[in-house]
Image (cartoon, rainbow, N blue to C red; front, side, top):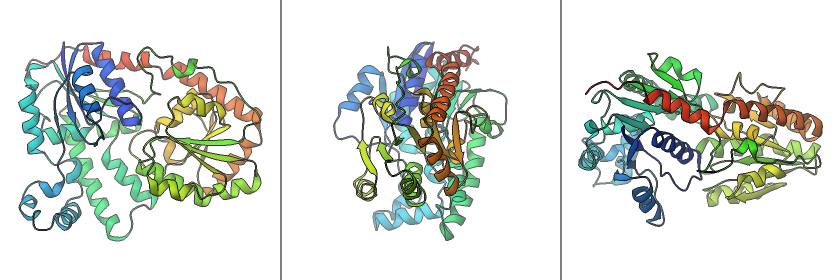
Length: 415
């Protein structure tokens, strides 16, 4: 079986959620057939090493960089006059274009590198990869890994208050357009991977599988649920870990530090708030490290090390379109979590409020839940053990691979 895999993320280093899922999907596909990769380079790296790894280790046959709306259509003729201004106007005129407009240069790059018709399956991470490359409806055996919907990102941004005034109105319009274009694309896919049941209504057919986000497992590595996690009843460390360049994470940490953390510290003076993860910007570092009781950890090679020291974890994100992998990761590492209502998306009905974690409806409840768990080691140990039992049963790489294998071993449609 020959598979073409289109990924918008480098598969190494797996230091962020998008790269981790892309890596896991590739490895699951590679157990089913021979995989060639086409790389949509949305990131800029300081060295050529990621490109070399993609070519040599992941059989990348071609790559292309996406263009902004002002580089497409009629805008490209105006752009040389005042690039920054034209870019702002183009984004304002059609904010949905960034994730849905066909990209002629990318389409040409793809077809120079490979002939999609020669593959049994074409698997694309994210719906926008299908829209950018104009593959929708062109090939009968296309699979979309739709773990994140850009329309939902916009909808939840609006609901969180992150968009205001005229920008809010434009975001509402863009969300409607994106939702329509996403649904039209998925309707033409042979199969769709979703990360949560709540997204089923956006597919429009029954050719889907739930492929949940799982904690990253390196090749040959130990499943996180099997990593020893001793419990320290004396710890008063609250931990947030994730990609620190992620907009929902930045917005959520800012809100937590402003509205919740000072009140927690008043009631539990020995508490500490550790922030760990990759891609932390200088602006956020400077802002956050000024807050009393906050320690910036930054990137860590082994996430189990910071989880071992933590009493509880905090997932404060206020918007987003997928599921928050750090929720299940916290459960996997047997640490009770206090999470925002937004962070529960995809985990409701799996990890229950008051049994494995606390869901905070507002700043006041966030404070109460944090204080309760910090002052009650027995309860947080009970939460952690219950969460780990669920994670062990439902969120292993073996089960992840089986979902992918079941979808791809269905008879393909003749081209």
